[in-house]
Length: 445
Image 1 (spheres, rainbow, N blue to C red):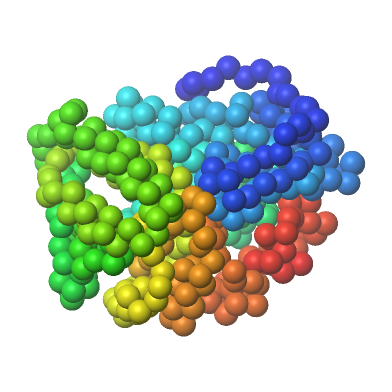
Image 2: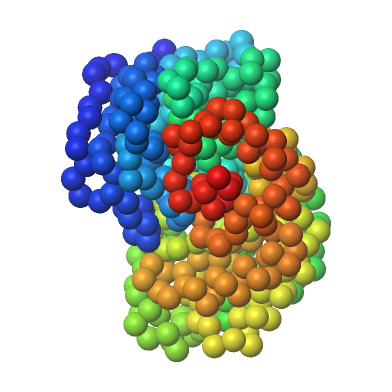
C-alpha cells in the first residue's frame, strides 16, 4: 500500500541559509534537491559527484549538532514519504525515509499496528531519527533503530543497496545508525506488532528516593524515566507498562492543561523570565516542580510515549553504563549546587537494553541516558562543559544529534566496534561524498 503518489522531484539553487530547529546550526548549500523516488535520489547523488559536491540529507532539523549541514547539495526528503507496504505475515512495515514519525504512528494505529518503543517526540523523519540513534526508555525494548529489519541505501556511486541480516549483513550491522556517513537512506523496514495499550503512571518523588531505588524502578517497569528539577530536590517520575485495558485516555481539558498550558505555555513564559532574570530561576524551578501532580492514564503507545515540545532549547545527552547512572547524577546535582549556574530545564533520565548496532549509544552494554537542556538563547557553554566532564569520566557516549565536543580519538575508545564502522565507511564512501565538518570530527578522515 502507499499513502502518496510519486511525481517528479525538484532541484533548485539554494536561496536562504538552512537552519536547524534550535537555530544553533546554519549552513549554505549550493543547491537543494527534493527527489520523489529512490531512483531520482541516486541520480542526484551521481550528479553531485560529477560536480564535485558533497551531499547531505536533512529531515526536520531536530539535531543540535551540524550532522546535516553541508556546503554542497542538500537533499530534502519531503517527497520521499508514505508507507510502501505492510507485511502482516512478517509483521513489518516498509516506509519511505522522509516520512515524519507522527504520520507513521497515526497511519500504523489506523491499521491496528504500532512500533514497540519510541522517543518522547515524533516530529523527526524516520531516517533522521534512526540515523542519529533516537531512543525512548525501556527495560527490554531498545531504540527505534533496533526495530529495523531492512534498509534501502543509496551509496556514493549511486548504487541502490538493500541490507538486512541476510542481505549485505555487514552493512546492516552499521547502517541502522549510520550518521549519514555511509549513504542516503531511501526506505526503512520496521518490525511492528498489533497495537497495544500502555498505562502511564506519573508521580512526583524526591531526588534521593528516586536515586536510591533507581535499579528497582528500572527492573519493575517496562519503561521508566524521570526528570529532576535543578535547584530543587524534586523529580517527576513516569512508569509505562502494558495494560489489558480498558483504555482511559487523559481528559481532553486536563491533558491540554498539563501538556500544553503548563508544559509548553507557562514553561515558555518561565524560561523567558529566567533568561532575562537568571537569579529568579531557582524560585521558578521550585514552583514548576510542584505544579505537576500525580496522574494515571491508559492509551495506545504513541499517545503515551510522546508529548508536544514547543519550547525551543539546546540539549546535551550522554549514554552511560547503567550501573554508573546514580553516581553520575549525584555528581551532576552537587556540581549545580556548588556552582553559580542557573538551570531552567529539568534533567531527563532514561534507560535502554544493550543492542548490537555498531555505533548505537547502547551498543554492547546496558545503558542509562542523562540529558541536560537549556532554553534557546541562554549561554550554554559553562553548564554543558561541566556536565560533559562528569559524563566522560564514566565512559559516556554522546548522542550523535546532540551538543558535545568529543572527537574520533575519544569515540574510538568508548565504542568497541568503531573501527568496524570506519572501515565500512572507507569501502562505501572512499571519496567522502557524504562528509562534512561534523563527521570529520567524530569519525576522522
